[in-house]
Length: 88
Image 1 (cartoon, rainbow, N blue to C red):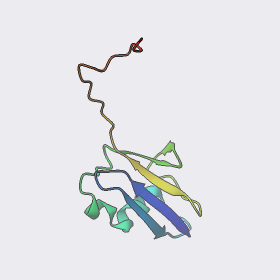
Image 2 (image 1 turned 45 degrees about the vertical axis):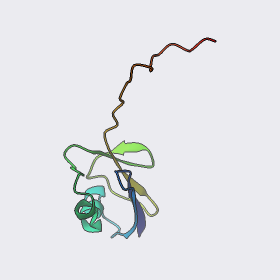
Image 3 (image 1 turned 120 degrees about the vertical axis):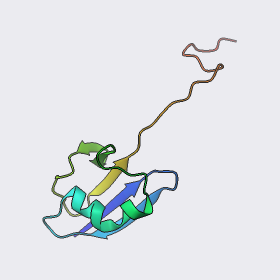
Image 4 (image 1 turned 135 degrees about the vertical axis):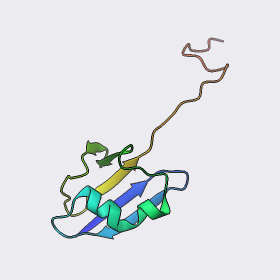
């Protein structure tokens, strides 16, 4: 079956993968080679999902699923950034 795999790291990666019918998220991630391409991915730290829904690494895949590896998002606040709307 065909599944997709994406990671929006410093260099976004999108892969099309072929998987056996009984493949899990973790198996496809490991077989895809993305862990060698993006060495900042740590499956013990990064959350994964399918089409925007968090899933566990042992989740079974279906034809057409898109595995997403999420990176931690941080927000840097500068002095000009406040939560109040600017009023003119």
